[in-house]
Figure 1: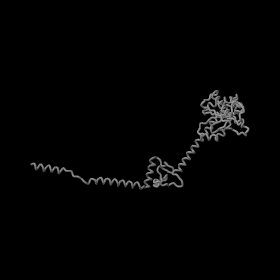
Figure 2: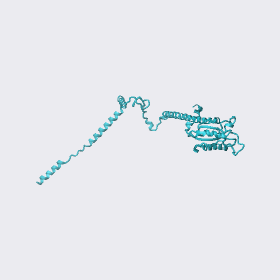
Figure 3: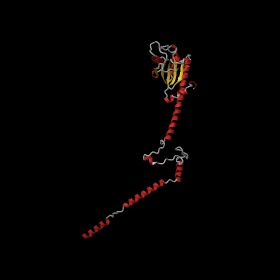
Figure 4: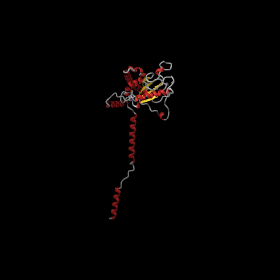
Length: 304
């Protein structure tokens, strides 16, 4: 009985023993080879471009975007167009350090110069337009000052000119503003400032008051030279504009130039009278590129 039971157990154990498959690696290997074959087929298909299929793809994309003439780059007639810009072939020598430039030509140099020229043209046009507007605005200011002076018959006592700084209102000081070697404003000079002051108050520009003298040396008085005299005269006009005329202190400045900036040379008969003056400069707030254009554009201020 015990021997029969032992044989029964051994039989069941032998029947339940799992068979080991030593060739399972072949399945994984076959899968890998299949994937590699698919990869190579795809790569081969990509490398061979069918022009007809490519054209069909182009037509499909352009029609899908709702246009058949959409241009993305210059020279092309559609979204994808083999007649447009053709990519340059890859030059491996460039990547390895070899130079493909010829006769000093830089890659993209022509396009850069074209863009630079376009930008410069746009800047010049913009600056010119701004200069024209500034000249017209200052011309309107000149007309307003002329009209204020004309009401009191003082228009001949002031001269106007346009520079790259702004509008210059020249107050001729000979026998109008100051006595010889004096910085005290005469009554007629006060009338000129009273006529000009209300117009200046309505303008946003800073006002530089600049004193000038002629070439004749001072022969007496409290001032040792034309430098001191011209500076004190400018300061006197600033005080008058700030006081009775009510201009803000922050808008005013005073500078004396002596005889260093004459309007006429010493040989000119007008030098003695006109070079001795006080200039009121309405300083333009435009950039230098705009202000440099103003004198040429403003040669006929009163005609604008």
